[in-house]
Image: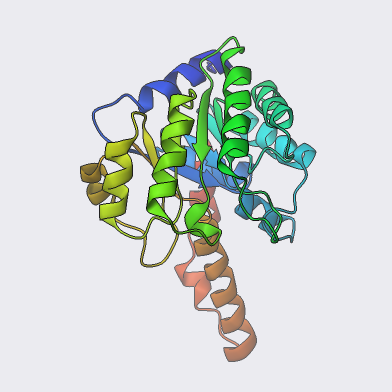
Amino acid sequence: MTATQKEKAERFRALHEGPGAFLIGNCWDAGSARILAGLGFPAIATSSGAFAGTLGRRDGRVSREEALAHCRAVVEAVDLPVSADLENGFGHAPDFAAETVRLAAEAGLAGCSIEDATGDPARPLYGFEEALARIEAAVRAARALALPFTLTARTENFLRGNPDLADTIRRLKAFADAGADVVMAPGLPDLDAVRAVCQAVGKPVNFMVGIPGRSFSLAELQAAGVRRVSLATALYRAAMTGLVEAAREARDEGTFGFVERAIPTRELAGFMAG
C-alpha cells in the first residue's frame, strides 16, 4: 500500500522533530532514488547539480519544467517523502518563487528548498530585502497548501563569494522568522560556525555534506545542533568517480578488475525491488 502525499509530507515534517539528526539521501534519477530507499533512507532529496549532470549540463542550466518532471519521476519511484532542490525557484520575482512552490506540491513533493543565489555571476546573491521577500512569498504559497509542505530557505553566502557568518545568520534568522520550516547555509567552514547557526535560529538546520574539508561526521553535526544532513552531489560524484576509474582502467590498462569490484546487477535490482 502506498502512502498519500499528505501522509508522506507529515512523515517528512515529523523527521525534523525527532530527538536527533537524520540523513536524507540525494538521488539523481528514479533508479538511484529506489536504491537509496532500499538501503533504508527515511526520505529522499533531489540535487540540482546531480540532475543537471545526468543531462550533460552544469548546475543552474535546467529549466523549471525539466526540474519538476524529474521530481515527478522520483516521487513516483519511491514510497518515501521527497524534497527537491529547486534552486532560486527558477525566476527572480517573489511571485515566481511562490509559483514554484505551488508547482512543487503539484508534482507530489513533501518539501523543497528556495535559495538566495541569483544565477547571475555579476550579482550572485539577492540583497537582504529581496531575498527575504522571496522567502515570504514562498512561505505564503506553502501555507496555502492542503498538506504540511516543508519549505527550506537557503542562503548561498559561503558558496557565492560572501563568506560572512554574521550576514548568513541574519539571513537565516529572517527566513526562519518569515515562516521557513528549515534553514541551511551550504559551505559553513567549521563546526563552530555550524554551532553558531544552530544556536541562533529557532528552526531545524540542514547541513549539506559534499565539500572536502567541510564535511563533518553525522555525530559531530548532531552534537552541534543540526537536525537534517543532506548529501547534495556527493553520492552522484562518488558514482561518477567509479565510472571514470573503471573506464580509465579499461582504456589505459586493458584490464577489467572493476568488474570484480562492482555490485552484481541482481543485488542492485534487489535494492530496487521494494
